[in-house]
Length: 248
Image 1 (cartoon, rainbow, N blue to C red):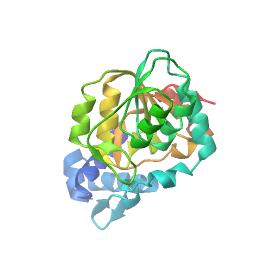
Image 2: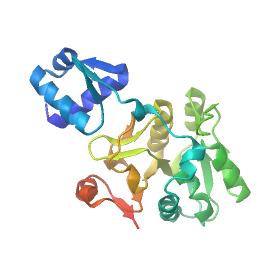
Image 3: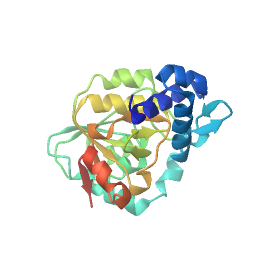
């Protein structure tokens, strides 16, 4: 088994259980304890887990997400640059999915395409879309007070009623090996399903998200086009090998 395959399985098991023992991972992966110990040291160096006596645990901050108000005032110029590029990808007459989040929210003033239909799980988004006279559908389900995003099984059922030309998704982390991630597994389910129902998927991320990993995986980098205002030079080549980048 390749090293990166072991890494993925270690993170998956941690996401399922929160804490794993060294011997448990050795049995699961068919590797020696010394090999697993080296894996955990490397993953801890990437800030993906915390080593404890006899095993490892998740880092708490990876599953914590800032609220909508807090995120609105972070990296404003970068988000607007990303949003402007993303809005240009929408063509006349398309049906799109617009994910909850501040970067996708910033797209709305820049949408110039005509006769567009938008489905969203963002309460603030649908208000802004309607005020711009864009035909809009808001998913039903449980509203997260923290981020004003609709999530849960009812939202997933609603989502299955639609098919999209394109979807535009936010993310909290962009990593070459771990893919796109977000802190909340329930939001990850909504994002992943929207991606599956779309002809083309875009992930919007300002440069501060690149190299970050949070708790719940959306999908691999190769499955969506990355839109960002700037890719750090240290990451450019490895990301470009995995996916198309729209950068400006």
